[in-house]
Length: 255
Ligand code: NAP
Image (cartoon, rainbow, N blue to C red; front, side, top):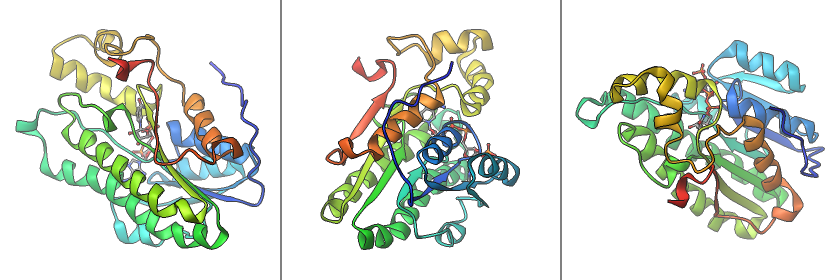
């Protein structure tokens, strides 16, 4: 499915940095911001994927592992739109949850966003304008079993985003979370086998019985639909939306 770019957004002269932009939602966000005229810094652990997206968007690729917090501190600071998007999932019961994976997920999904926000805010404050969009999740608002690290990190980002909104308010900087339900990306594809194993069902049943169990509309969200919400948050009519958590979850959290 293709999603029309309906938001009137002009980011000419602005620089955007998108983490995890080599794939899925991050790639769609990089493409959308570039279509609005931004110069996009495409950050991903996968150097080849980052380069491919940078080539396609006329941007700059930087290969970085966001669990290396020194590497995060070394990323460009002159950024007007920051999209904290990179993420990964590990599915396991708490009694067996690997501690090293828990730490990795907190670093990539909670600590790296803090480091990046701290890094770019001085430039945004200097210019009197900035947009920080954190790609959180319904799992930043509610929990699911077997996702202790992911749910914890996504809840942490909600708090970080609200503090950023309060501190940035007098500097023209907004900070918001986008909370998707399940989106058609490689991250979801990778979970299907794991979910089938922990729930003891066939992989074919995972999408309808597990992934979309809580969704009122039984569809996966498309990455471009998330990117269009990002575009709206960067557009002039959204200037007073800050500290918010916007869901795009097919009604999941309406329960
Ligand atoms: P994706 O297709 O797997 O893309 C995530 C990207 O982040 C990948 O390119 C991945 O690289 C990269 N990445 C992973 N670990 C990294 C690290 N340590 N340093 C730098 N880059 C790293 O996933 P997605 O579904 O688009 O997810 C993007 C964001 O949306 C995540 O924060 C996710 O939690 C959130 N989200 C997704 C869904 C969904 O249903 N898909 C729903 C709600 C929220 P590799 O592929 O090489 O690992």
